[in-house]
Length: 138
Length: 311
Image 1 (cartoon, chains in turn blue, green):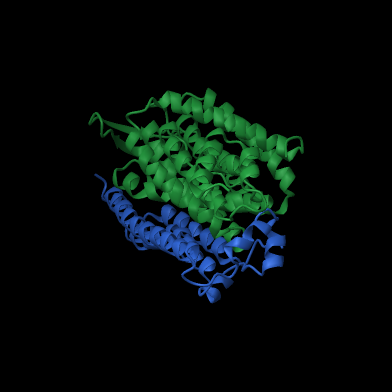
Image 2: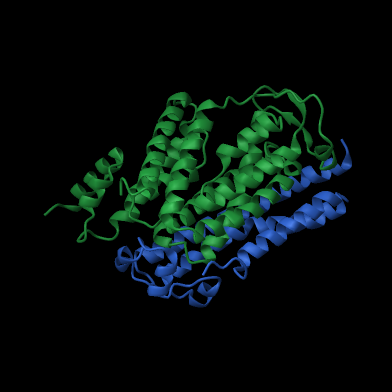
């Protein structure tokens, strides 16, 4: 087997391990935080019993009426149990980005230049999407 | 006064019939708020069970059904739909990569194109009026039904010659079938056409909050000539990138409500585990017909709701 191919297959296994770890952390966090929210173990930013007034509204009206966070501002309000759920969601959302970052040194070592370029481009795309800086529709 | 048990029994019966009127009557203004997340959890659990044997991801079922029959705004349904599709694809990822069913060389360029365009789709979807998106969603779902009903995938497509682009990108491999032990070398063709198709797939995924497995698979298998099992595994891998990108746009705009997203993700993932276990015990063709009928109904519902005919 071509050593470069072997290296990439090995990278596929590394990617799989990192992916599995990310899912475990993200899903566990989501389940735990949702139960904290559901059973009122911490105070919520928006009490769940008031949500039926808002969940049929478009998102911009919901944000304007409730002061719900946009971008990463939820990080400053992790003491509110509803926003604590975003931690698990964020882990699930960044898992692929972290896995791609892990790919970089191995693709570089394998001298797979085109794949490395694509990998770096994907990291930029995911980072831009996650940053919340661009593409604001408000 | 009804007891909680009776309420839950009524809720289950309502869900079984997918009757929005019955649910609305039960969960009227005085109804407890928790009835909707419970209904969502049960619905997603059931959808998860049928999604696996039907060979579809959860998102394509979730968005039209939940937007059609629950009181949530389409913005929040699409945000949750992307997380549902993302979670399912992520959960399958390690096994597919470890088993060699997902191919990184094949996935990396296609995922880059699709994830970039999914961001554009999400931005367009959040900027358009809900009724326009609802009509477009209805038409898209009816189109998906047509694709799913008519496409016959090929186990080992014939690829006479690999195109230059795929050769440059190293899109080839050797597939070892775990069931038979046989090994088959594969290569791909029509890569430029597939890249263009993945632009549209990404836009649709981002705009409607759908997973795009229904489209990834035929493009990989029938257009590019990738063996069916490698197509299925790689499709799931591509979904993790497409849905991650688009989900961030929804999350950053505030369009992820934990009360909708969390029970949906948890219900769908638990249901999918049951679905994977019963995969060999249920007639897949029957389940597939059931899913097509559900999608047809939900697609018509979305279309009529968007047009203001059935609100």
